[in-house]
Image 1: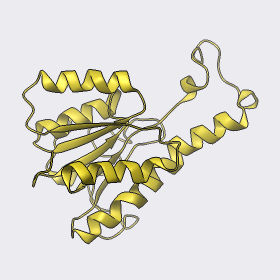
Image 2 (image 1 turned 90 degrees about the vertical axis):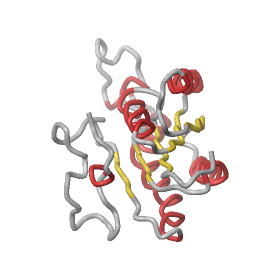
Image 3 (image 1 turned 135 degrees about the horizontal axis):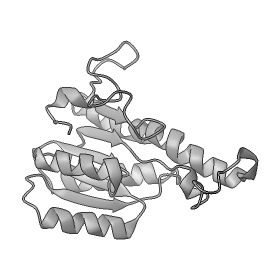
Image 4 (image 1 turned 135 degrees about the vertical axis):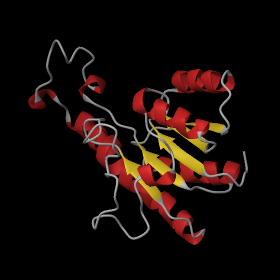
Length: 189
């Protein structure tokens, strides 16, 4: 997969919004390292990409983002295969359904959540995006790349329809050099 084309890491890449972003990036000619904890879903994504005519190349990585060692493993695997990381899409997340499958019929109450379940929820939804960015951004900066990061919202939806969660303009809260996904030329929807 080593290439001069841009390479993106997409977490939560095998289903939902992550899958759509993966396919969109591949269609735009960007190579994608698709990270997900579900191996069968990654295999299904591989099959869908192989059957299509997308111009980017796909690398799949099964990883549990609640494992603190996963971030360095992901970065090493992507750098080993592609030689570069240009885009990070922090999309992975878990919801109440990961704790109780029937949570829509039988709502989850906060006092029903065990400390271990809460730790996993926080690890995947809050800690993982920060720690993966922490592992990726130094490589981008050394390569003099403009880091492009898109964080998933807490509810896995955009703040406004057809807009990046970060908005369409860089804001003062973003570190210098960071730009929203919308400024990369990748089209959404």
